[in-house]
Every structure is written in C-alpha cells, then in structure tokens.
Image (cartoon, rainbow, N blue to C red; front, side, top):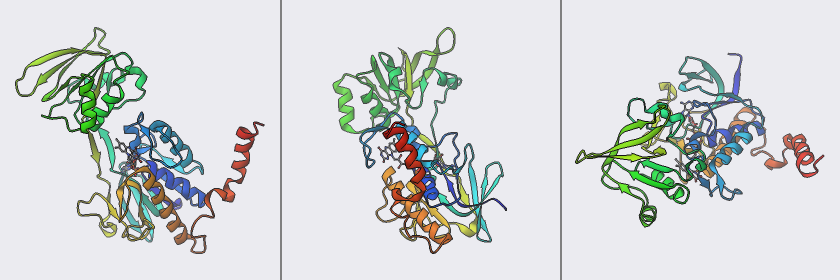
Length: 350
Ligand SMILES: Cc1cc2nc3c(=O)[nH]c(=O)nc-3n(C[C@H](O)[C@H](O)[C@H](O)COP(=O)(O)OP(=O)(O)OC[C@H]3O[C@@H](n4cnc5c(N)ncnc54)[C@H](O)[C@@H]3O)c2cc1C
C-alpha cells in the first residue's frame, strides 16, 4: 500500500472536477476516477445548451463550461483514471480501498463521492442494426446544431429534452416532425404551444418501426413509423433522426457493509452529518448531485460549494493546524508563478 492518496474523487463531473481543483489548491495528493472516457459528467448530455445560471458566466454553451471545468480541475495535475468504474469502497486501518470493476485497487486516506445520478447513458433504439447509423445521422444528443441546417429532422420522444431541441432547431432545420409513443406530450406547455404555433407535427402513440438505409447502407434515408393503437404505418423521408427516450442510470457502486453511509429513504442521496459535506462515515464525503442536506442545491453552482467544504474539511483532518479556509483563494501563493505567466502571455503580450 505505498501509493496512498490524500483524497480520491469518484466521478469526474462538475463536483469532482472542482473538488480536484480545490484539493490541489490545498496541496493534497489527489486522484480522480471516472467511468467515462471523458471528464465533464452529465453536462455531456446537453453540450449545446446555453447555461445561464453559473456565477460570473453569462449565457455560455455547455461544451464551453465542460472545457473550462476540465482545464480548471486539472490545474494542479491530479492523477486521472478514465474508463474506470468504481465497484466497491471498503476501509482497512483508516485507509479506504477503492476497487474497480476490473479488480484494480486504489488507496486513499479520504474519499469524495461525486457520482451524481450515477453513470448515465441514453436509452438506445431497440432496433437491430440501428447502432451502425450512430456515426452518420442517428443521434442521441446534439453536438453542433449546424449539421441540422436546412435538414428534415425526425425527433422521437415526448419529454422536455425532445421538445426543447425541437424549439431550438425551429429556425435552423428545414422541417421537424415529432413522434411520441405516449398519449400526450409531457413537456412544458409553453414550449409545446410554440411548436404548435409553428405547425410542427406532433404524432402521438407512434414509434419507429424500421430504419431504411440509403443504397450504400451508410445513412438512414427513410423511417417507417407505426401507430401503436391502429398499427397503421407511414413512411417519412428524413435527413437526420434524433432519439430522446431518456437515460439509463447505473448506480451499482456500493460500500463494504462496515462503512455503508446513511442515505435518504429512497437511497438516492448521501446524507451529510455537517455542512463540511462529510457523510456518516469518517473520511467519506459526498458532493454535488449525490449529496443531500437542508438547503442543498442540485445545480452546478451548488456542486462548487460542496467541493470547497469537503476539501477544507479533509485538509483539517490531515493537518489540524492548517488554515480553516484557503487564504483568500485567488491570492494564494500557489498561483504566483502562474499569474506571472498569464499576465505576460495575455495582458502584456510579451
Ligand atoms: C438536461 C439537463 C440540463 C441541466 N441544466 C443545468 C443548468 O442549466 N444549470 C445548472 O447549474 N445545472 C444544470 N443541470 C444539472 C447539472 O448538470 C448537475 O447539477 C451537475 O452535472 C452535477 O454534477 P455532479 O458532478 O454532481 O454529477 P454528474 O455531472 O452526474 O457527474 C458524475 C460523474 O460520475 C461518474 N460516475 C458515476 N458513477 C461512477 C462510478 N461508479 N465509477 C466512476 N465514475 C462514476 C459519471 O460517469 C459522471 O461523469 C442540468 C442537468 C440536466 C440533466
């Protein structure tokens, strides 16, 4: 057990990344473990959305927020393990043992759980061979709205995300059709009315029956849709298909019985024992969407505050004489050489 970290962060979303930044600022030996191949967490679900509610950031595309979070999170060069799923956390002699799905073990004095709602993946179309079109014109999220310019778009899904996308693409796509298997669209009324005012067809009780490929078998050319009540079918000629059927969540990550932290009654959230984001287990902290306490905000802004609280608590357990808070954060000495480089490169242009 030679390579013991001060803090290991499980999850590389906004709360995990900001925890890594702050842990570096407080000079803690830090590791992030993230299941996906990229950092950024569930913001990857909505990369094109404009985010308005993060302090000091006026409307900013979510992809830009991801890039900024990642850059900041890696400021102090934490160890980053991508494509790594944590399966179970146990504790021996005051050291946490974090075991991954491949059996690999990571050792840490403290653990910050930053797993949000778990590992989320879009629910895919249950049609044989559909996956081969994911590289061409079958989408589960939108990366770059320009590809929909002057295109005929079919959206399958009746929730807020599907309807929001349709509204955002109204003046971009040539035409849009929405199909939904349920009886009634379940999105915000105002957005649905907007689509209706534009004359966007919303076909309910209907789902995709078949994807018809072009001659080269590289793209979807037509979609056969089927009414679930009458079994009537219709064929739509389309350029792009967007599926918004919700998300699967893998929340299988667990704890050795001896250190199972208290959760709420539906076991969704880790309860805090204090505002320092410590769970009911010593050395185990929960930040971001997975955390719950009075006044907790399940938004990116809330994740930042949790991260600062957890890291400051950890610092004090490792060094009881340390400052309770990092000395006015951005005046910290650790930034001195970096400040000089940034001022020279950007402001003075030397
Ligand atoms: C459609 C949508 C729009 C939103 N819009 C806004 C908005 O405008 N403004 C705002 O402030 N908030 C918004 N939010 C909420 C915001 O995205 C979340 O509050 C934020 O992402 C929470 O960050 P987090 O780090 O706690 O969790 P997440 O972002 O969920 O990150 C958790 C990370 O942990 C990883 N992980 C989970 N389990 C494991 C495991 N066992 N092993 C390894 N890694 C694991 C996951 O892969 C993921 O990368 C929105 C959310 C959604 C769904």
